[in-house]
Length: 258
Ligand SMILES: [Zn+2]
Image (cartoon, rainbow, N blue to C red):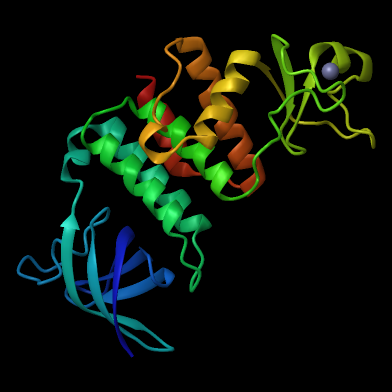
């Protein structure tokens, strides 16, 4: 069956002498592995369309065994990402996570749009990579339906405290008063909890990102300490829930602190 899809090349791996295997995240079919015959040849008609981070229209012969690329028409290439090593490293992380959470035959256009938005902002240099990472992670946590309840302390209900413990795996907040009484570092069965201390301002900002519309999702607090904690919290929360670590993230963190 020949189909036309719109999607992002989230990964491209060389294979054979001149071919490529693409991982496309598409609006119509979710994650698709697509074989681009001759995709590495300079004069290939797939040259631009098969580059990682290209977004466009793809005509694919979809079979049970292999999906073969027939046509590729790039709409966006995000070429500017290559100019900034830090932005490029973060884009690699975003693409790797996207491939990880996308499912074959289960399109999720909102998550694809989130990634595209982040790649655009990164490639245009409109936001610092650290801010893009924070927004991508918090928004993805919301998209995946694994978000914490940040409405207030889950014991006393108070939402006006200066500091809270966030229990990463349970997604619950405990204010410091209730936390001191119940030793939040240990779960009821005695196992160690993964706890982060977050200020009320940080909780408010995380909530705001998760609930923001697309056009407003990059409005972050100006305070650098708040931003740093928000970024650490989203990463810890997302990676623990996905039960994953990402080499691309380690690399990004290494070079972003240079
Ligand atoms: Zn409380």
